[in-house]
Structures are given as C-alpha cells and as structure tokens.
Length: 376
Ligand code: AHE
Ligand code: ZN
Image (cartoon, rainbow, N blue to C red; front, side):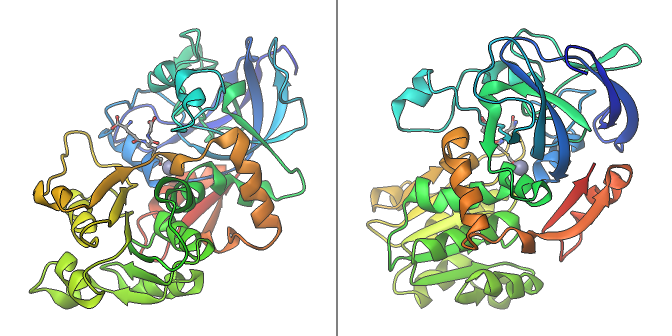
C-alpha cells in the first residue's frame, strides 16, 4: 500500500451528539514528516465521549475520535527517520519535537510544533488524510485511533518495545501516564508524603500506582461510588473516604480534621467537576500542600477558592499527559509494564470489536468500567 491510499473501516463522528457510525473511509499516504499507522487496538477515554457530546471547544466534525492507540507503522513520509515500517508505536496527543521553545525549556512537556493545526483537526499542512465518499474527515488530538489506519506526525510517535501487547499498551496513550506522571513528574511526590486522590477511575488508579512508586506513606482514595474502592485497594490505596458519608461537612474539612491538618499532595481526577477541584486544593496542608488538577472541565467552567488558601502556602498546579515527554519517556512505562512494576491489565474491564465501539462508549458510563479496549 505504500504511497497509495488505503481503504479501511473507521468509526466516524459525523456530528456532535450523534452516535459513531462505522464507515469505509480512505486514508491518504503520509506526507513529509508524517507516518501512517495500522491501529491494532484503542482504548476509549472520557475525553472522546466529551468531544462527541459537543462540549469541547476544539471539537470539529466530522472527525475520527480516539487517542489511546496501540499501533504498527505501515509506511512513512519523506524525511521520516525515527520510525520505520513494522515499528510498534503509541501515538501522542502531546507531541515531542525536541526543537521548539517548550521542548527546549526543560520545564514542560507541552510541545508547540503541531499543536495549533492539531487543535483544528488538521495535519500541519492544513489538510486532512481522511475522506469518506470524497468528503474530508477531520483528525482528532493528532491521533484518530478509532480507525483501522490513521496518519500522525513523526513527532507524535513514541516507539516502544515490540514484545508488549498492543491491546494493553494502548492505554499508555492517555490515562495511565496522565495519572502516574502527575505524581512523579508534576508534583514530584517524595517518600513518606501523604496523598489524596479525588476520583478512582482510570486516572485516579494511575495516581495511586504513581504514589505507590513514589513510596507515599498514605494514599487516600476519595470517591462517591464505594464500588470503586476495591480496585483502588488492589492498586495500593491505604485509606478510603466516601464524601457522602459526611453529608454535613465539606470533604476538605473531613480530610484536614482527620489527616493532621491536611495532605501533602492531592490529585483531582473527578472528570471535570470544579467543586471537587476546590475541595482538592483546600484539603492540602497549610504552608506546603500541593494540588494538581488533572481532569478536563467543560469549556466555560471556572475554578474558585479564597486567595487566602494560596497566601497560606497551598500550591495549585495542573498538568497535561502527566507532564510526560512521550517519545523520550513512554518507553520507560513499557519497561515498567513488562517488568511487572506497572499494572495495565486490570484497567481493561471491557473488550469489543470496532463494530461494537458504540457499546464501548456506553460501557464508559457503567459503575465498574475502568477502560473499554477496542481491537480492530
Ligand atoms: N480541547 C479542550 C481541552 C482538552 C484538554 O484539556 N485536553 C487535555 C487532554 S484530555 C485527555 O483525555 C490536554 O492534555 N490538554 C493539553 C492540550 O494541549 O490540549 C478544550 O477545552 O478546548
Ligand atoms: Zn484521554
């Protein structure tokens, strides 16, 4: 197929708020600096559901959603040197060009090389590689993994060990590094620290794993759904708090009162609830407690707290993709997985074929679902 368009199947999001539809599409060959990938498996993240709902300010339709892919390089465009056909890669929604101001700063993983066009659903030349019956289909997050084939930028390809299962590695495309990295790269939690985790979905569980790796002394799992605590315990949480058990007190007060003035670090993985973001900040210890916002709130939402909270030494932070520089650092996550130090398998609570991807999206709303994985 090299140099030729590929006809394949994909789940197309024609319009916001409408179900995905399986279509035969055409995937153009990669242009200079681009790579065409065969998608072996993809996870579904709440952000895909969020964008499909129409609430994402950057959502552009029609598009092919999906950003947790486990892929094999099919062909490469002109000038591509870092990957070749047959390589196993995880596509990155946070690219790493190693040349832009952001990459060179040493202070952030937010590469700017392709981010502007990516946000418009386009490749860097302003066009798209997907079409359906001649109609252009936009890209999504620079990844578009709900398709048998996709085209991404070379700078958006993390090459990984080919011996690891791609239907597990796909989850390294978003949820797992986001939580684990927030602990170890954004907050830099130190041994003995106390940690509170608001929300025990895929991101919260990854925060818990990250906190175990950082040797935190207490890992407090907080969720209004106590069914989530079993998995949180398996991943290493030590304490469990259901805010509904303290209906007469704000949860931040409960944590301050019961944990010696508050925690050293808190992580907000609630799925975009701005009241939870406030509680996560305010449950931090005076003088040094740091809270990291991880989840995506709908456009238009705003956070608030009394400035006194910051004046008295609490720190409010956030990170995208856990501060992880994907091309450089994702191989390390794969090594941890292969070495048994990173659990990926237990996230996979539901598995479907591409034809049943709609069932995968529905499964996301189930109380015990962590991640559905779609095998192409
Ligand atoms: N497009 C949204 C913002 C979405 C957002 O914040 N995305 C997260 C990743 S969500 C993964 O499930 C992120 O990393 N953002 C950093 C970036 O560069 O987009 C909006 O509100 O417009
Ligand atoms: Zn995601």
